[in-house]
Image (tube, rainbow, N blue to C red; front, side, top):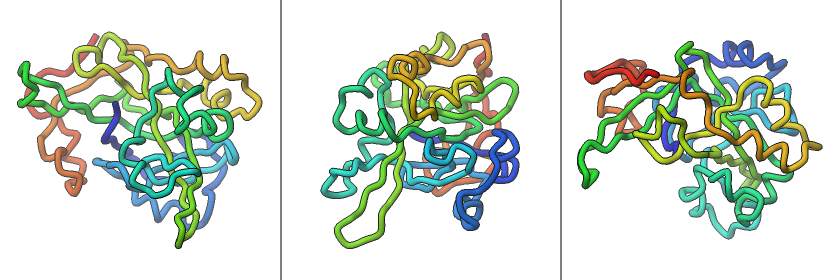
Length: 235
């Protein structure tokens, strides 16, 4: 799964890196408060929606389907297993009509160091070339009984590549540049979309151990991604 991640660049740099043409609204950049080094569920994150593929937009992390009675379901829907998208009620409508890119510079995972899982080492996982990347996501609009419509999103996960298999049994779907336009294409058939949801090449990724300060979401600074003991994960 992916439960915490990083965007280590400013909004303008994000727009340039992904060749976007605009912010969705004048307030978008300010609301993102980038860079961020410990993004957690329920927080506002940087996305591009299939409805506005040239814009940097925002959504709250933790999907709330339009039919949900309350927002409590969001905590269970921060990730969506790629294998279940076409059938699972929480995801199937969004998979057909509301797909998005969710931007990151890296993500955290906790490696179990003992059989009981009581000792865990936090790892920062990123691309070897240090470039930001786009994860495949879904989005929804949900309106609370007494409030304004709220846009929410979830990160799609798949089986891990060989590098990450020793760390966790899932990883986020990272879309290469050629796949991003297809993922946002409203006319793309389901089989073409499903074919994109594969592990990112292990040889393009690496990881290193980081401070356990990352365990607390209120800690959010560049020191969190600095190497701390251990050896980088390389292939």
